[in-house]
Image (tube, rainbow, N blue to C red):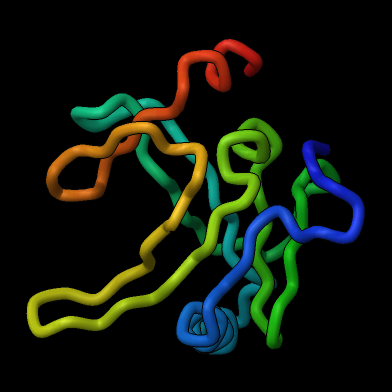
Length: 121
């Protein structure tokens, strides 16, 4: 929908792809759907849900056996994002490196996009 021919909407690091494949295999899911929703102290939050069947309007990204579906309303916000999976002493989880984010809260759970991008929605 908002793609550039020959360029995937999002990319995954090898660690993220490996973790997504493990999640897909453990539950027999077709992949993970990522999106954004209103919430958090900065205004928006990322969402991730298991998917058993892709929606025809989803942008489907496949890399190293991992499959991510991007919800239609989130495609413009997520274009160019790199998904990583990080493990530290205190926590582990997916991290989004999104060039469209202009601000984030201190904990990194909530994000803000440029107002002109949000207005296009």
